[in-house]
Amino acid sequence: MILLNDAVMREIDKVSEVSQYLWQREWAERNGGNISVDVTDLFDEVPSVDAPVKSLPIQLPMESANRVYYVKGTGQRIRELRDPQYAGCVLQINAEANGYQILWGGKASPDFAPTSEFISHIKILVDKIKAGSDHRSVVHTHPLELIALSHHPEISKSSELFTHTCWKMLPEVRAFVPRGIGMIPYCLPSSEEMADGTTAALLEHDVAIWEKHGATASGADVLQAFDYIDVANKGAKLYLMCTASGYEPEGVTKENMDILKEVFNL
Image (cartoon, rainbow, N blue to C red; front, side, top):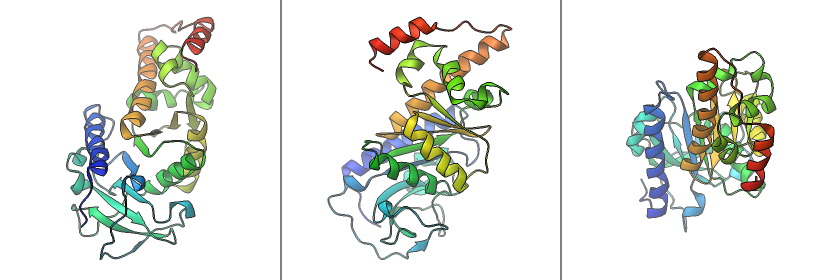
């Protein structure tokens, strides 16, 4: 087990902080939700360990070879990340990008393994780096109001309409989720189809919604990724509160939306 430097530990501490927000909001039932962080660039040199190389079920992008990630374990609960060595681990992808070694953590089980959604997280982070983004973190969770809105028979069928429905409810949603929300039609959780759809959606939007399942966002750190989902969910919550009260909300007008866009240079 390696000794982690202060920079890596600061990012892992942020993971612990965000994990408790997700649990307290009832966004992470049982083992639902996942967090991954690319910490490669925080090492001057990645220490070698005498640990077995474990295989992955599919070939990862070669750009991920030798990179180092902190990730929640499969079957572990988000709330258990308050002890990041127990429910998560730091691992390094091998040179062939088809396996990994655990460098730190993973104390929950002798057979500890990363979440199955880790593969989609790697694809997202690899593509973000290729696009010149500073995003190194991915958060997937189950925000109640965004999921509820994704069941809407009309709003859920269009990324543009879903985005506008959330934007119009509060100026801050327009300001702080400026690239909007991408809708991914329902597909099998942890599937390659979902991974590819999420990766594509997050290249264009701040938040990706898995229809009837959950939300995913990336950020420079996990706090930024969490903020994107949290703010988007506020828009969905306000919309549902209005319709539950028996009326269709008027929302912020298009004219005022355009003013917001200019003021915030969106």
